[in-house]
Length: 388
Ligand code: BGC
Image 1 (cartoon, helix red, strand yellow):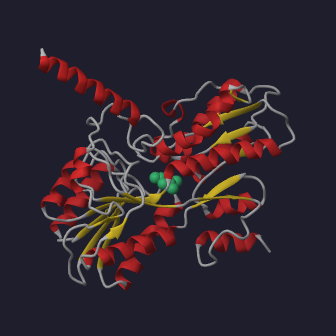
Image 2 (image 1 turned 30 degrees about the horizontal axis):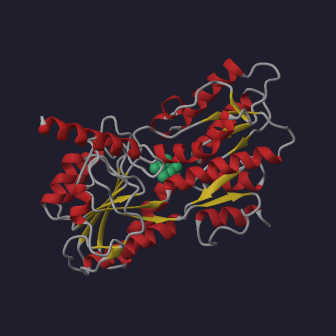
């Protein structure tokens, strides 16, 4: 009887944990398929000073470093490839930087090959962070520290830390910009909007969407915003593979089914620039006026569109600053030094809470597009071209 009571109490506690896992502080994967969340594995490795962690025991100058990147679904990944190669070399390492253009199976093979080649550290921007469990376990067994880069690695205890721009904040900034843009438009509320979310296999898609909905949902509930298609969940709004053609097709279908005649499309939440431009193409071919639309990544084309007032906003997540920070950490880890983390709570990957170092994203609109970017970045050069 006592055992049953204990079990019930334990179940109650884990149900509460699961519930609190749904709160906005959990940036991890949807908990349905993931293992139950436990904080025990995290606390086992939490150091005395929660802001400093040590990854592995160090390695020699000249060591091989593996950098496995996903498909080239946006310009930031292409920029990262060049920057990692250049900066890791300059720091005295021997980088192996590869894209997994063929998807998750290719990335699995690549990571296995990197381990075979004797890399001393792995930096992984996953195609699908939940599909690398056995490769990461092999890395762990070989004593190779693993940094999840930009996208969280899930369903594994073999990830030492996560480095990214704050994904939830990105979503909050996008939701806020959409409302702000609509507020400035000629039309009075209620406004008709549509929502686009990212690829469901990318762990970032959830915090992007939830961050944005934390701002938009109350305005949908009070009638200020109307999602005319009725497609409001992450699943309904998803864009497989972050592909422009998939977002465009979905917008084409939504426009022809819901926006006939003089029904206006006033705003679109787009999670990134590539998909924003795809949505704008669909709107144009439906013969509708330009809606207020968000983006992310400060891609060259979109920086120009923001300056021209065609795309309302984008996000500055400076890839150069990001890669520089990661390479600085690689140097410290090689020397056996601890590195700083600034979020030890939000990123539950289904197996453990992964300590994270988060950088701060910045919203960019017409107001700051000419002043926001570092001049030596692709976005800065695009801005310089149009901001004369
Ligand atoms: C990145 C975004 C990017 C998207 C598509 C996400 O994981 O955080 O910056 O737009 O992937 O490539």
